[in-house]
Length: 166
Length: 165
Image (cartoon, rainbow over all chains, first blue to last red):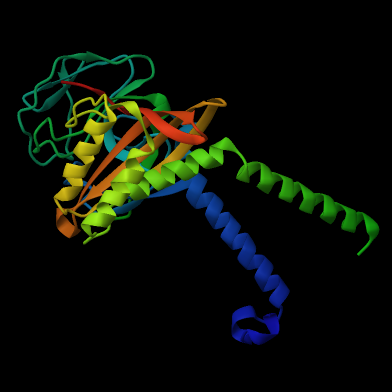
């Protein structure tokens, strides 16, 4: 088979080229199914930060070394990581979080969110977050509260921070 | 090739054959195959003729228990019978809107010879182009084996986020 392929494809040492190609395919498969999970955004819940159709990666290893932080945009798994929600962390474990006229209050103090464009008048009851619980929400607070899928995520649902290129 | 390498190759080949046969004859493979079939049956072809649609729904009906219980959350109310479910899906498909159902991250647990549990993510894509909407749900399903066929007995949605209102 190799003798029929052009020399510029396989190079002077076809065997070495094939081994390199197999290693590359295997390494890529491992990286992009275990470490850097590709995501493409559907919907408008992360506007204006992330537009519909935006591509990015969920960096799984980051959460092996450090816990999730407030302000991070994270991937939240369903039954697995093939489909994920992409939301921002606004509430950390042990905090009491509430929406008042669209502003997030953390333990009664307003949270500065420079990434938001407009605020609709969201109001909610205070929610106490447990030891492994995070409040996650999209950046598009201009949409109605019912239209946004947001709420409390367990730590084991958070896969990793989302990385997008500018 | 020396004798040890040949022996290792033969053992490896036999192991692979045994693994393939075990997988092929396993209940998990049958259940996964049934779920693939269900996803196909819930994904209508554009311009599907009426007779083909009826045949598809007859096959869909045969994959469900009579007293199937479905609770997938808003906006669909809980359903407790096969006929109600069939009617609901039939009406949704009758709109002619393009609809695609995909099941991913399927985890199958065979409880015993007649019962199994499945956890999966169902993604329903409706419409085309800019009008396209995507609805993802994590579903827990219970299946029972009846006359050699796996039937869906219940489907319950599990929320990845606890709502705050």
